[in-house]
Structure formats: structure tokens, C-alpha cells
Length: 307
Image 1 (cartoon, rainbow, N blue to C red):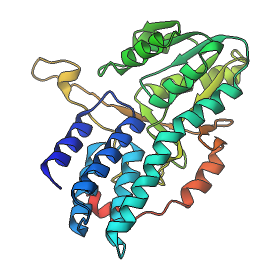
Image 2: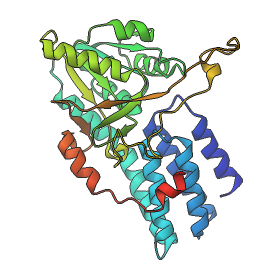
Image 3: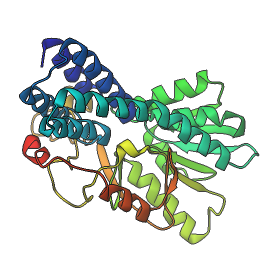
Image 4: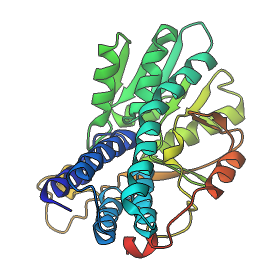
């Protein structure tokens, strides 16, 4: 790959504030520009870019899917035709899916305004909440330390005319879920989904409360387009299941010697009944998710590239 594309992929790898869909769209756009500069890519060039994408954000399925398309194109008889087409299809999906999900979300909401809670930053969730702003009384967000991407979510919601209450992460976790808990996902797997660390705490509290009957009016939403679907089990310790450990300095810049600072970015959340995923195709149950995953063609080279 050329220097410009390398710099662009390095910037994507360093980005800890943007959502998976946004980063994937950036990567697709950068690759489309690269193809215009290099209309006849070699097999090795495609594989080198695929390897870079696998290492950039291994917890974000859309980037894994993009790497997979590169590996599949490298195996094709005419990569210069196969890859531009698959890249165009992925670009179309990434651009159109958030709007479709937002419309599904808006139509499914009750007409009377209610309270909402969300966590971290997701461009898909942002678009859905803005679309539904006439049915929102208030949205509770948290900072989402250490990257503080929750502040980005809060500020964008506020600029859209939505009343927002920003809390610390601990304060948000201590609230009993109410109204609507709306979450994004970086990766949807056969047995669950992955998102910002702490998501599991919110989901567990919501699930326990619903079982006890304390939150009969609470609705739990996971918004994710199908580019975030990845055919690997949550429990399979494969090269594609990596709980990213961020720089220690993000948590404590000058920590004393002998102190270990943990800075995990992501966590896994297992499916439970009656959890569903709201996609651009509409609602999908865990069974439907597993059926969709079976139809995703994976390059046999991909695991080798990830090692």
C-alpha cells in the first residue's frame, strides 16, 4: 500500500472515540480513493491491506468484514473487478443502514415522550435518537472514560435539540434502567454482542430488573446494522476475539511503579430472551442472527492473516 493509505489506516487504528460504522465508512472511502490511484491492485497489496485492517480495530466487525472482502478479492480471478464491486456494496450498506434503522426505531416507539438512557458513542444510536427526538423527554448519557466519547454523544444530541443529562459512568451504572435503554454494538456474534466495557453492567441490571417485574415499562434496544455481524462465537478464543487493552496512560498518566493499570476497552454481552437486534432489515432474534451468520462467506486466508 502507499504512504497515504498507510497513514489513513494508522489514524483509524488510533481512533478511540468514533463508532465502528464511522470508522468502517472512513476505511471504505480511503480504499476507494486508493483504488483510483492503483486501479490494478496486486494480490499481495490486497493481503497487506487486509492484514493492516485486522490489526487496526479487531473488536469492530465492519473492519473485519472489509478485511475479509480484501482477502476474498485476492483469491478472485480478476481482483481489479471483484474488489471495487464488493467495496461499492459495503459503502452502500454503511451509508444507508443508519437511516433505515432510525426509521424502524421511530416507528416502534410509543407516541408519548419518554426517558432514554444510552452509553458510549454510536453513530447509529445517535441517528436513531435524533430521528425520534419528538418522542424523547430526556436522554441520560455518561462520560465513557477514559476516551470520553460519551461527551461527544451528549453534545451532538444537545445540538439536535434533545434535553440531555450527562453523568459519570459510575452514576449512570447506579441508576435503575427505566423507559428505554438504547445501545449500539461493535460486533454481533452468534451468542451475543460486543460493545464498550460497562455495557454488560447496564444490560445485566436491566435484565434482572425486568425479571423481577420492577421495570415493566423499560424497553431494551440494541441497534446494529448487518455489517457488524461476524461469524465467530463469543467464547471462541480466535484471532478475531480480542478484548483491546488501551494505553495505561489514558487512565493514569504518571502511575507509581509497581502498580498495574487495566484499561480494557470492550466487553461481551450474551443474548438472553427476549433480546433482539434492530437492524436495517428490521428486528432479528438470536436465531435469525445465527442464520444470517451462516451465510457470510469467510476467506480461508483470514485467520492466517490475523496471526
